[in-house]
Length: 209
Image (cartoon, rainbow, N blue to C red; front, side):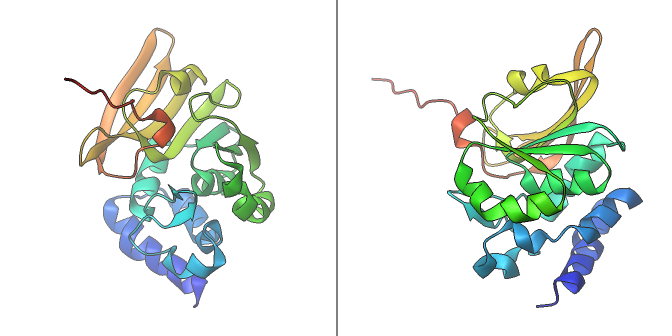
């Protein structure tokens, strides 16, 4: 399979046509080898309009959804970025000149992705998704959905920091952008999306008699 051609087709048919106009972001998406963010026997699926599995149920977000989240963040060279359950997004941000860290709760994900993350200059951290690794981030992004406002993630932002994530409680969720200001946090809805919700953040089921 010609993966370079697949990347170009992805950007042309899934990214540009969905109003992702940032040329720096487009260039990063053309450069990062998305096929290496899944096991080798599933590399062919990396550029389809699906959410291919990495390991243990963890999946990549569709190219369309993650590119729209990343553009909403308006990332800038030199900023600090954290990808929570977002290794591919972290690599794209690193290509754009940010200091990026990828956080996973399951070390098995890094057993697959460690080589490509090292090559892309992305630091890695294993920690529960309920507790972001570090603080003072300019941007945080997730390739999985959350069931509501992720307060701990917002607390890890510096003033002026941005969080892009999909919030989902039903069949369809909303991509949203949070911005931390001096007086509080603003929220803006972006687009409809339905990636899987992170199991660690899903509310416990409630049983009634």
